[in-house]
Length: 438
Image (cartoon, rainbow, N blue to C red):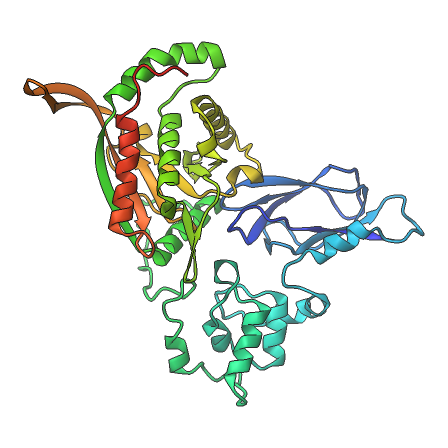
């Protein structure tokens, strides 16, 4: 009787694994098409996975709280009413979608998964199988620079290593040569040289374990600082015209469109225009290549009731007006706080804005959201005395001002590019037309 394999779906551009947080079905249970099978979670979003077919649950391969790589089979369904029929092509394609795994990988999964436990890196079953057959040690495998996403070692990387390795086989107990290690010492996936201090709790201290999302956020923040040398530039912008314009428009905007008019759509509008002016900031780094992104997809950091944060993405932000941006921003923020974001809502970001001003903070130095190369922090808007140049001389006036701080990846964004881009964002905000209509 034909079966259909349910695979762990890809939940984001840089997400390679997800945690199963809940099963809604059991082995032997009959399920309908589109019935929810399980709930999975990543550092970016939680999602319910529905069944694409009707049938009976034949096998569940992973228990709750298991961390499963993208593309792995998590369950198998016996197709309903298909006794004696040939297995559909869609089932065959579904079982073939696992990346870097063919027939040899599936036959060796059980044995190869027991190897290389001393390594902190993730290796696919196929890579483990090749390494085992060719007697590649853990240290040698760890020394290979991966060409896959996030530095992951692929089959071609292992075969290339074997070709250049020479005829002398390595033993599992023999460490990799010092010279070979030195060639990969600067790769992003390398384990940090420091060790976290051993902290002990006092008798009256309270110990609270980080939840799953906070652990993943912590890992990503540390990874970003290791991968990218961060530099931060800061400018102060006079946004008096923008403040006056918003105060004039916000009530009419709410009545006309049913949306609150915050400053965030204007910030996003200015950033999107500046990214088109300076495409080197709308980019990612892949090895020694710089990828200039075609789309301007701006992520916005949203604080969650749990104390964690998430970054939903405004797609094609440069092609939307203030009304469209306000609608997207309000919708995404509400869905984020209610845990209703879809996987598509958090994918494809090319730049990020974090609004420190929401918490009445003046300046921040944010950490880059990998694999992007820059992130902008917008501070609170405050009234300040300022020197104004007039045709009859200088004068002191009360103006609305705010700080903009840009953290950028100094591997590819130098001070000139980062400074010009940040100044351009400030110019767009300062030059806002006080009389413009929505």
